[in-house]
Image 1 (cartoon, rainbow, N blue to C red):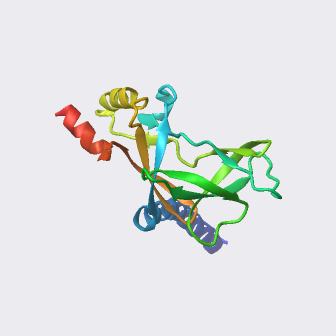
Image 2: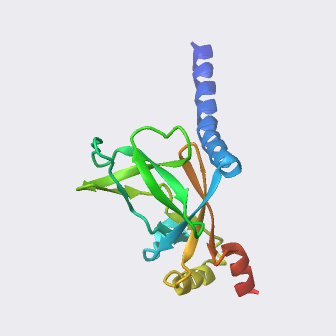
Length: 183
């Protein structure tokens, strides 16, 4: 009986370590093997003190065309194919129930369907930053989000998963811009 309890305890300890390590490994795989895409962002939501310091990132494109013959209910996981445009930013070019065989695709959640448009929820919405740099980052974000150039979300996509890697303005990485503003 005592041996069985130790075995159960050991399995429980392994499971507690395996779950977060698996998530970290998946995140790192997306960052190292993922395809780099860029998405134009829209204005952020107000600051939420309960979630810590972050910038609210909202890609501009929030809808995709519903192909004929496909029925989608709200909350369904769907796959969107992303294709780069002439300016280098990616847009949704296709939507499907199954992962595409080729191309850069991302798994997103359908919020609602209206006529032939599907509203989607992107799998990322926050870019976390250092507490000390947060006030300057908030100011930078507010100054530039409505500019003609717009802020670009730099995202890595691999096998339907996405990781928000950085933000950029006019091709310059956010971290570089922030360092220049602070010093």
